Amino acid sequence: MARILVTGVGGAAGSSLARQLMAKGHWVLGVDRQRTRPGVADIVAVVSPCRAPEYLWELRGLVAKYDIQFLIPTVSEELVLAAEARDDFAPGVDVVIAQPAPVRTANDKYLTMTCLQSAGVSVPAFGLPSVLGSVHEAMDTLGGALVVKPRISRDGRGIRLLERTSDGGARAARIWATLDDSWIVQRFASGTEYASAILRGGSTPEPGDLVVVLEKTLPPMPRSGRSYSIRKLDGIAEPDVGRLATAAASSLGLTGPVGVDIRRMQNGIPVVLEVEARFGAYSAHAPQLVDNVLGRYLHGQLLGRSA
Image (cartoon, rainbow, N blue to C red):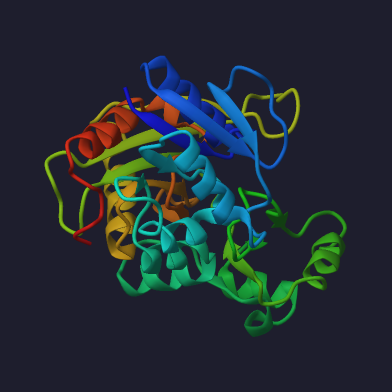
């Protein structure tokens, strides 16, 4: 049994991961900046927001108090901070995240797209608002409807679809007028959506590396918000998606658990939308990822130390 600290247990990714770990017999300390429902972890501690200067010190105190062996960050906004501090906890405590430089690149969606495009990895046409001109010029340049989102990862918040509708694009123009270059603009990929879960042990392929492709679909009439149905695909289904996800993680130099969001363009070609250096909200659909990560760490095969 391992003693594990999981951050963000009030969110979908953290709560799912904590429950998986407890079901496998591990002891879990969950942390979140807000009080969470009971049962999500063996103990739940309320901590400062991850941007607060005391946040890391609070984590270090909890690690020492509860004899934690592994710390697994799951909150998008803390990933760079966790990567930069991965070697600064007590001896024998491992932070399950990649090296700082690739995590910083993945954390900025514009840098992610630029890096992947340079490496020949398929991405949608993209750009920055200041370069693309008006929303109508951007649609003409990028080739259709647009998705705009904050460049810095925020757990999927802030994403907007801009298209020419019956109002002549007036709504899209109003949203466009609020954007600056802290946002990225991408051509909208209208096809099937996938959440690909990756595990990479090092900078070169290793026998224990994994890729699991999950297909995301919306029911005809979702009850509230965007409530996706998730279907795990077998090893031979959608092989181009699995290859693309692996190429994206490899091109960015990410190791450990990695989530790669992919959609197909109208012509069927898959493109990478964004990449995150963490366990995602759907990790329970790929339980072998958790088993593999903990197995490697418990046997001293520290993910990414050679990257």
